[in-house]
Length: 345
Image 1 (cartoon, rainbow, N blue to C red):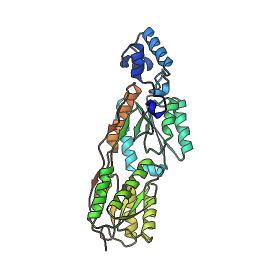
Image 2: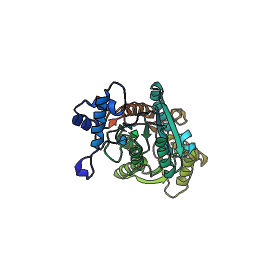
Image 3: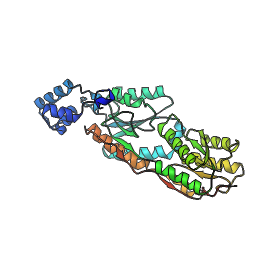
Image 4: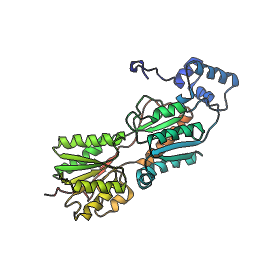
């Protein structure tokens, strides 16, 4: 980090290379105990790194002589939510497609609290079961980044981390997709739109909800939101609550397709037609969305590709590569279909 932040910048491979008078590649090989480095050169590099304050946590457990050949992924959610959400299964498939080819394994754990999550991270590191972690569903002041530092693990972050890093970071911009959804509904005459959102402790879910609200206000659309948990049951319950309240939305936007599909079911149960009586917009573009009747208007993402990129870059970080800039992945894109139509009078 820069000195202007009030905290000391982490020692980089390039710093050690400059001080030791060798290449960055040679430093990486020496600190990772890879073959091809003379014993005297290795000792010189290791001593230089230690004198500069280099620790294993700074780059993929660089002083460790062993490898687990495994990557960890911990979800703080219910097993039901994980099993039913195609985003997570696609992300894991993308990770596995790269890891399997590299003879790495993917170790996943599902926990139900922040305390259990912390214990999972520390246990995976303490037992030497993983060489790195994939961090998804970022939260405000996310504690997991301190955990991987303490544990000496490399990581790939799916979203902006709370601090500067030389680890791989994958980001995208969903603002245009959200703007397209709002403009689509505004053009169809909707003046009261509700949101069924994901857990607001999740930073991306909160930011998405806030941007929707901001754009609704710009288009003079009244809005309300109800928090849910990404499950079908949660989406149906939230929709029933909205449809039975005083707000009477003419459209509902959901934070994933699973909740949107369940929301359509709740509307049908009340005798409402989609989109004649109420319009529905999802998020994720799961496989079934285009085959529904009516087909679901939604926002498409690329979790499989994100998983592949995260795994590829994380393996490079484990080998000692430093990343100076985030990697931008394809942005989400709104796909209007049959479930959104003119506002009911």
